[in-house]
Amino acid sequence: MKLDRTEEHIQDLFNRIAPVYDQMNDWLSFGSHRIWKQMAVNWSGARPGHIGLDLCCGTGDLTRLLAIKVGSSGKVVGVDFSRQLLAIAGDRQPPFTLSPAPITWVEADVLDLPFPDHYFDCATMGYGLRNVVDIPRSLKELHRVLKPGGTAAILDFHRPENAFKTFQQWYLDRIVVPVANTFGLEAEYAYLNPSLEKFPTGPQQVALAEAANFSLATHYAIAGGMMGVLVLESGG
Ligand SMILES: C/C(=C\Cc1cc(O)c2ccccc2c1O)CCC[C@H](C)CCC[C@H](C)CCCC(C)C
Ligand SMILES: C[S@@+](CC[C@H](N)C(=O)[O-])C[C@H]1O[C@@H](n2cnc3c(N)ncnc32)[C@H](O)[C@@H]1O
Image (cartoon, rainbow, N blue to C red):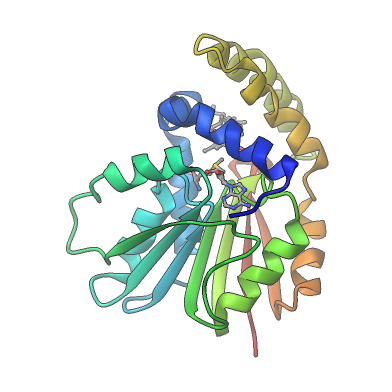
């Protein structure tokens, strides 16, 4: 996998935070991130028997939720370029539930997916779109591998235009970063706030999805506007 310097920087960042990634998410969102991830999977259009794809899967939270949705008659692929996070994903047992779909973990760049055109029925992407180095290319690749009529849900942070914006900035800088600092990861988590500043707004994400040939794109703000889910239909 040939990555450019910026992609290598992102890859190294997530390989460094891998040992504490899940714990930090649970602590710092008081477990709420699991609700937001379930909402994204519910909105992904995943159905029993589907072939599902989880992009930027990390430790596999959304991948496992997708596997429950598509069930034993379906199958799910989780893709990430962080070997350390994928290793944790592979070690995790799926939650005890009625036979989830089998999961295949693939180490690859979501900007250059090793899958044929129109292969997947549904897809999810949790906190990945803001971290890829080329958002338009990522959306085009997602559209390419989805079947005509395929659906997807992309969960990420969102900058609210209300009082929660001040709270979100304060919380990320004054709570998240100091906690990360106790693990020697201050710089890695300090990346969060500025990454939100550069991240496209909901309407801008919809425009980017339409430019990537999605026939329908809707952005839903959740968690007081501090998070958002972009719901897509590939059309065709
Ligand atoms: C699962 C979450 C974030 C994943 C995540 C995404 C990234 O791009 C990172 C980049 C660099 C380091 C770490 C990450 C990363 O963990 C969301 C939950 C975890 C957040 C760290 C905490 C977010 C808190 C909200 C802004 C406010 C929550 C209020 C609370 C419910 C009272
Ligand atoms: C914040 S984590 C999200 C992990 C998981 N989806 C979750 O919700 O917890 C972002 C993930 O995107 C991955 N990532 C970023 N750019 C990528 C790319 N171009 N190809 C593959 N994975 C990428 C990182 O390695 C990291 O695992």
